[in-house]
Length: 283
Image (cartoon, rainbow, N blue to C red; front, top):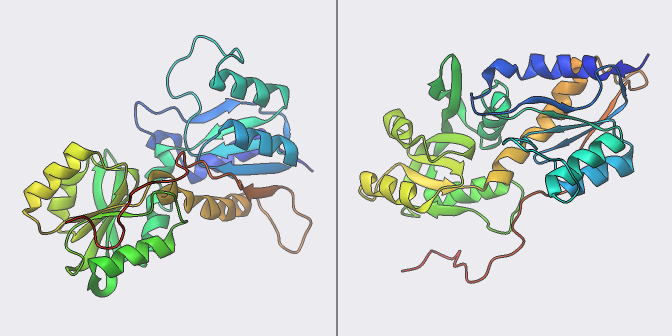
């Protein structure tokens, strides 16, 4: 018997409760008929036009995306805009779209816990909280290592990107306690300092907040690692696939009721950099 979109949405909402989403966020079902059958699900960080075309070519019935397609209000979905073209392609192709964003960030397991696990952290505890939900994690490395070695650890755990890993701090400094927050995290510096972390791994670190954080640290910890937004969140997709299939009752010994695959499209917007000095920084 085919699963319905309603079945899949219920499973997703159990894994990533919508109540965990931030007030400003827009999560849940964007397009689709709850009664429609779902046989193939494509998982992505961003529901871009290329991802939607990939879903259509594969015959997907549903895209599960991390980032919202319609975070801010729109007055038209005409194909003269990219968002309009995306919505139109989804509807015409009978592809449902479901979003699990900040509710997946705070879930356990979720985006940040997957990142912490990939870095080998143990004894993880919340970095901070929004209401009843933990935001970010703080954990310990198996043994202290230099900041340079830790940066290599981050680079090895995450998919390679055009921008690589940006680091602020003494390459030879020892780090043992690590704060992590997948995606943009330069609004949590107070919590990072309070946690006693030696280094903070997040993304989208803007000039002024990052500079002020390093000034407050007087050159010492917490050091900063900007791992890139797409890279720090994309690891979650494989975990999402595993948990979704299990939640839908997938039995390896029986014919699959639904297929789920991670999109092959890299939705990181950057394609190359010029003039980067990865070998020790700029004097």
